[in-house]
Amino acid sequence: MSFEYSPYILSLVIAALISGWALFYIWPHRKTKSILMLVLLAAGVAAWSTGHALEIAGADLATKLFWGKFQYLGIATIPVAWLFFALTYTNPSHQFMRRTVAWLSVIPLVTLVLTFTTELHGLVWTEFRIIREGDFSALQLSHGLWFWVYWGYSQLLLLAGTTIMVRSLVRARGAFRGQRILFFIAVLAPWIGNALYVTGNSPIAYLDLTPFAFTISVAALVWAIFGFRLMDIAPMARDRVVDSMREGMIVLDVKGNVIDINNAARA
Image (cartoon, rainbow, N blue to C red):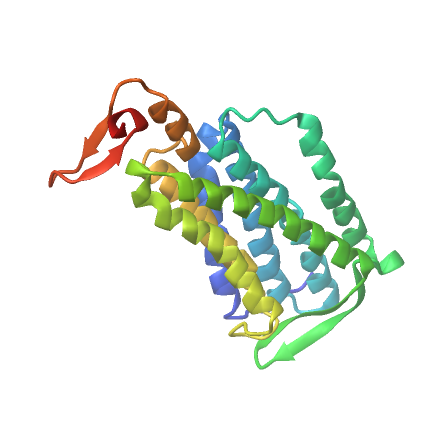
């Protein structure tokens, strides 16, 4: 493998380091289901960012091709991790079967195998070559049938996870209102980044903004959960516990404003 310096890799290296830091920071809490999914999400983003940086830095087609494939370790992990993070964080009592996770992981695993062997069948990439724009260079790809199968599948998983999180955010009240903005940033960032890339509006042609966007998501989620000490209770869990209390509960801020009230107090 041979590499050459490109200033465009610096931002991707920073993104990989941020995701790596998040992974290291939350690793001790991985026994919690939602945090385990966040660990997988951070690992996927780190792999994607690292692979994209080394693809850009690659000096020949073989090097770029290898690291282009390497990115799929993250690309194949993120949608499943995103969906199950949404499920387990918004509803900690949700009992999902390992069999469900396994079945939903079949297509990502098949995608990994087909990506690393794409030269034999062309199902993921039918053609690949180096494209140069000034001092920026990356792979220019023509996509095969399976790429679009996986693209559609991943979008469905991401959309399902996003819908679950948005519904939870809309229902969240009280002390969780201060964290809504972080969760909305986490939810919206990947869609914005992917839309800019797919529509050709990326500031740098052929530079995929999606790993940057997911880095923002991971950082925002870690900050929202750990920075505001929300690891032990999720918005949906709060609603179920507090709203089912027979005793009335009213929460005031330091200025005497009512910031939360449960059903008993409201009645």
